[in-house]
Image 1 (cartoon, rainbow, N blue to C red):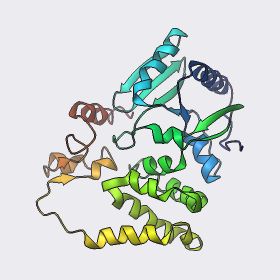
Image 2 (image 1 turned 180 degrees about the vertical axis):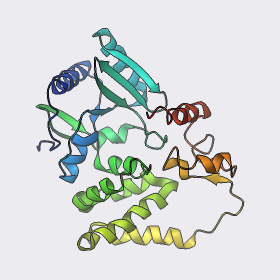
Image 3 (image 1 turned 60 degrees about the horizontal axis):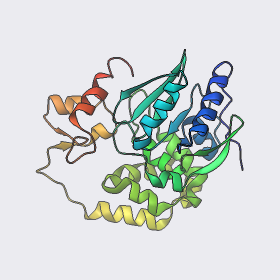
Amino acid sequence: METATARAIHDPAADFYIDALRKLQNTNIPFLVGGAFAFSHYAHVPRETKDIDVFVKAEDLQSVLDAFEQLGYQTEVPFPHWLGKIRSGDHFMDVIFNSGNGVARVDDFWFEHAVKTNVLGLIVRLMPVEEMIWSKAFIQERERFDGADVLHLLRETGPSLDWPRLLMRFGDYWRVLLSHLILFGFVYPDKRQNVPSWVMDELIRRLTVSRPNLQSDICYGTFLSREQYLHDLERWKYRDGRAAPEGPMLPEHIEVWTSAIKEGE
């Protein structure tokens, strides 16, 4: 069993996170650790971090928040489609059950394929690398682009990835995965074999047989950035690809997520 290689959080924050993780373990509610600790574990790239992200299933979120409220913590759900927070003074822990674009919802597969490791002296389970690649692949904001993280993960874990599950995760959004795989071959010529030839063959086959949909009025760019494609929705009158029933998000959730851009959340 390895130890996650993210740099330790310095006091007093470290005490808060160690104590919070212990209390979370005591609830017996299943959770996974993600963020910098999971990334550095898989990618072997040390990363300084100021917080810890924990992942739970949506149906367990309120139980987690209630348990911490009873212990004297402050809790909130700033984004009801993906994120809750547990606070104590200046410190907080994100409790995540989805991704901001609504695509990467936490389900049983996250827990079935989790791995155990040592985080801040505690044995915890990490989110699987396949789900980390899946969720990070869509983060393409001007102020944050996780493409390099995806490529570092592919470099270190490509040969052992559950590629059928990764393809399943991307589903109809397979072009996002293909774009990262093409960049991977550009960045790491010596590691191109990390991506099985059948994966590239399948994705290129899909690309070859696909045809333009001239009747479509949907923009899928909002899955990649909640801000950079607002012009397309407002001025060019595209429909938001995230919006139900075609997409995973309700209009009120999109409104809350979009409004938070001005507040820098």
